[in-house]
Length: 103
Image (cartoon, rainbow, N blue to C red; front, side):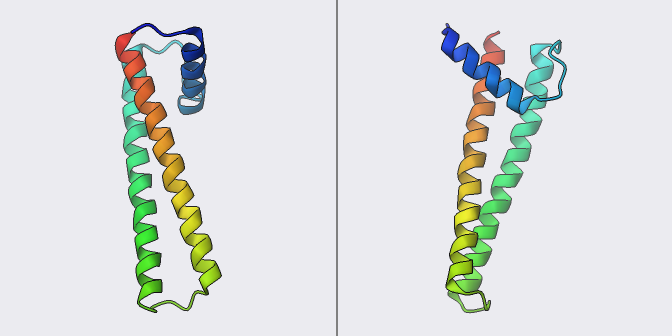
């Protein structure tokens, strides 16, 4: 696959964010291994946030908690934003892994 200079700059910024602190001299296979570990961690974070949304929703729906409506909405919004951001990070990591496979 041919990457434009814009794509390469974007991928370089993804690499800077997701592989920060790692040596730039690493082989692509080593970077792929690190990215797979980060992807797995993102899955755990995603599952945790979805479970938190379900927990708060369940406890609010069945009146188990004494949280006010405002607090409940704030919690659901925060965890939903987290799910969205984690999903975007996973997409970036997957794109980086695909890039290093073609390298």
